[in-house]
Length: 627
Image: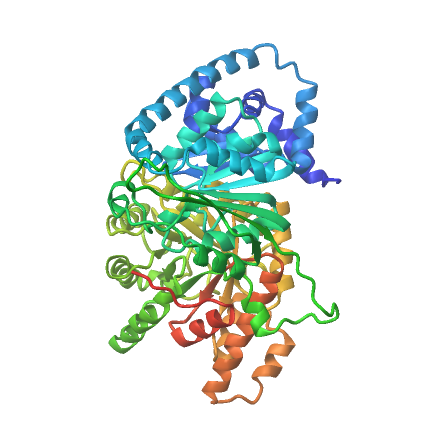
């Protein structure tokens, strides 16, 4: 596959500097944090951060935030992999400074292993207590190997990797493997274990097993080992496994059978006491798997009370429509797909009656188990205090995870970061970082506030560098524009700006609303070609007032297709019909996106619970018990 001249020249320029070559040589041996690179190269972190930013912008390395740490990983796919292979095939890496760097790297890894061992020694007693309750691990691992020994996989994903044991076990059977875990401490243990075992084709990264950073259709085996009993909604992990598996890919799930050892909730943090066979079969069927009955391993007979272990194997079904000419699926067929992850956006109310409506909407949408709910600002930051009050109440009085919008408008850097600190203290862990609209509105020119942040990139960097409390790290979402920003000077500028947001520390981008799936996928292609690797979540508008929607679309320069004018024509004041159309238009757009692997949507609710509920129902989402 060929590569554009601009990308290639950018990659060569980034690599063509002595310190950056040393960084790339080190990263070929595995992921490293900024502090670790600083110790190896004996350079300051700010200087190294500059080099790493250049390498990241060129697409040669990937930035992996992990708690208060940031790890960097060399790219091992596509044109970047071929470029780096060519460079290092001509480079004498058996001479200084590379040999000295590698020697120091070994000492850094030894320190990492010692730190991991120290942490694991603190929890080893609990792990040993649990192991004593069930069938020996070695026999269970032999059963897992029995499922894979006759295969050679391209890519294995381990969801909830823990100590990395499954990656070590399965590494001989795959070209590459990657483990995901939310715990920074466990990832330290996993990295140390992989290094100790000499595993070169497996890596780990921080992330949520219910909302992974992996591309759709990117793995041919997913393993979920002793994870589901920690989760309130384990079915979402099974659905996520279906999304990232290729058709015909395999899923292996290992977990405890139902038991009555209540003490494990307190001592080990188990949310559920085992997983029933019926539940697992239902989750698998809903997600599109053909699942075999589990193998059961009962505890040693010497135990009065023990736990049985169940091992399930499933295959992601390859389904063919009976009539290839039929492109539209029925509602029943659509709802047989794995349900998507959703999030909702609310705006701060301006009156007591509107506030009552907001809290009614929050209450009605809570059972849909959104990934998060965000609360906006008014233009010019006019509702900043109300936004803060509402997200605080959501965090403290509901089971939802709130995300507070934070902008650069009308405040100094110190004032904005003071708000961020207050949000953290109130339990908010997610910020939607935006430049913000001027007080005069979206079409007015933005003027930097005296002593304030210059733009959203400056704001993101400020949040990341803000010393809130040791280990504190906000999740940061940002905006993006699939039909270009209203003040855009062209696609190159838009994509470069989005890439800069990512490099500054953004975790996710949420799009402006749109109505044609091609708009999203063309934008996604541009973003990926420009080095944007973070998730790009489609923003879906739920506005039943067509005049109001047209006014917003004109301001934001969003295209309203001709067919949308036609379906709303003549609806006038017929609220029921307009809401019916709105929900169905939104659901059909989501289905078209879902058909091509998109599994997360952000709904602009306008504080209207009924429309959001109707749309979610059409997508197959059902109310959950949340609390």
